[in-house]
Picture (cartoon, rainbow, N blue to C red):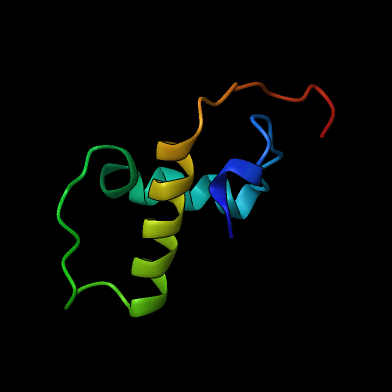
Length: 66
C-alpha cells in the first residue's frame, strides 16, 4: 500500500486505538521491539502503524457521536 494515498484524517476504531495505546512506545518512541516477547503479527502491526504515522501529518480529532 502506498502511504501517500492514506488521507490525513482517518477513523480509527476502538481496537486500533487500544493497540496504539498498548504499543505506543514502539510506534512513536522507537523503542526496540523484543522479538521473543511479541508475536510476528503484532510486530508487523507495530511497523505498519509506525510507517503510517511517520508518513503523514495527522489531524487528531474526536467524534462526539459514539
